[in-house]
Structure formats: C-alpha cells, structure tokens
Amino acid sequence: MSSKESAANEKIVLTGDRPTGRLHLGHYVGSIKNRLALQEKYGHCFYMVADVQALTDNAERPEKVRKNVLEVALDNLAVGLDPKRTTFFIQSQIPEIAELTIFFLNLVTLARLRRNPTVKNEMKQKGFGENVPAGFLAYPVSQAADILFCGSNLIPVGEDQLPVIEQVNEIAAKFNSIYGSTFRKVEPLLSETPRLVGIDGGAKAGKSLGNAIYLADPAKEIEAKVMMMYTDPGHVHVKDPGKVKGNVVFAYLDAFDPDKEAVKELKRQYERGGLGDIVIKKRLIEVLDHLLSPIRERREKLAENPNRVMEILHEGSRTVRIAAKETMAKVRKAVRIDYFG
Image (cartoon, rainbow, N blue to C red):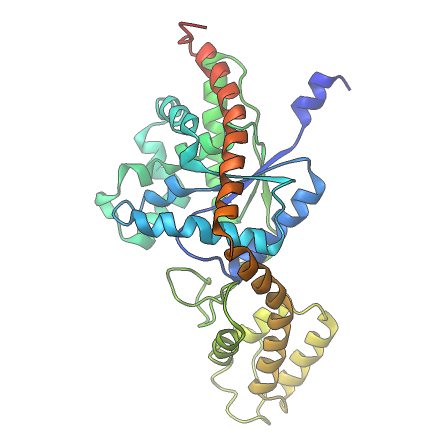
C-alpha cells in the first residue's frame, strides 16, 4: 500500500463531552471506557470539550459552561485518558471550526435540519417548539465541522446519534461533489453497551435529571444513592420471589460487576425468593467502590492543580489549530476564496 493510500485509510478518532456538568456512570459505560480502548488501538485520538455546542441551549448561562470545562477534563483524565495519546482541546479555541460551519450551512436546508431525528427528539425533550434557537437546530452542521476539520473519520456514538453521522456524511459528500474531493467518509463506532438507566428506573441516567451516580461522588453519597435505587416494588419480604427485569440494582450489576456468573446466580436466587434487596445493594456498593475509589483519588489529586489541567487543554488546542489551519487552507482553495495564497 502506498503512503497516500495508507493516509486515506488511517483511522482518526474524535470523541468529546458537552461541559454542562460532571460526568457520571452512564458516560463511563457509554463512552469513556470506549475512549480508553481506542487510545490504545489508534495513534490519533482527539478529545473535544464542546463548549460552543453546550452554549446552544445554555447561552444565558455561560458561567455554567465555563466552570464545567475543567470538570469534564478532570473526569476524563482521572479515568485514564492520556494527553500523550489523546489530544485534549476546547472547541471554542479553534475558530476554524466556526468558519467551516459557515461554509457547511450553505449546503443544508432548514427542512433537512428539522427532519433530523436526533434534533427532533432533543427539541421535544427541552420543550423548544418553534422557539428553538437557530444554533441548536443547526448543531448537526457544527458537529460536521467538529468532526471534519481535523480529518477524524471514526466517531464513537450511541444509536440515537446515528442520524447526526448520516448528516455529516451528507454534508461532506455535497461539499466534495461541488468543490472536489476534500473530506473522507465518517464511520460511526456503535457502543455495544446498553444505555444505563437512572437510579430511579428512568430511561436513562442524566445530568439534568438528578438520577445519576457521578464519577466524583464520595463513597457515602454512592452508598446513599444505591440504597435509594428502584428494585421490585412487589418484593416486600425476603422470602418473596422478585423480578429481575426493570430492577435497577441488577441493571447496574450487569454493567459493572466483573463476576458475571455470580450475578447470574444472584438473579436466580432473587427470582425464586430468599434474597433481600439489601444484600444485592450492598454487593453493588462494593463493586462501585472498587471501580470509583481510584478514579476519585486521581481526580482529587488532579484538582489540586487546576492550572496544569487547563494547560493540557491549552497545549492541545494549540496543536489542534495546526491541523485546523491546514484543513481550512484546502477548503478555501476548493471554494476558490484563497485570494492571497
């Protein structure tokens, strides 16, 4: 394979978080574990703190976004994302992304943006209706710029984000058809882990829903949250048969307990009766403490020097801007606006 072909086939991974709050166990199973594996497998990984995207529905709360830039960086560093293998950067510090977004907006109709299922669902969740901010409606276009500006082409996503990747590829294909081959096709990398339910049994754990266990939660808070978890309301007495389906404690044991055979046996005991909720909750507390204690300790150590964390983001942003400028030089040439070389 020639060096040109090798470059064309190279996998460059981009992941990121909106800085709207600390990260929780849903983020851990849904994306962070995958990031750790990807940085081991591939030579080029980028991690973006998506502050501009966070402002699309937090424009009146900029301090919330600013404060949480540090928080999401701390969470990722504490879990094990390595700045030597994954380049951390802040979206707003790469002005070329905004410039590329402007060009991409010319290639997408308002009707197409409104049809995007991900956007439609999120608009409904947030109750926007016709008062949706234009930036929020158009954020798939901004995401296309986020992904394509640095040449990334392998994007870990949940199934609900597949329409966004589809739209990224539509935009890239349209740009290429008008201006010449410039951008590669993007591949989604689907998470194999089911979405983590909230501790209240809600469809998902969420920062805005108050039903999540956070990576930074102290041990006592984790214990309190597990003890509040929804189990089986019909399982009143220890001797009563219990239901595993819909039982949040078992959902979390499935996600985090490394001893899968032991969990299967606990499920059998619970279903036939003779196993109390306190027993399975105590087991989950031990499992989560084993997972989160070292993460929490590393996070606390990192938080002692916030300036160093911000410097990691600053250094990464400077590095990423080099790639961004190279991409925009190609784009300007393709669009015929490279007037001064």
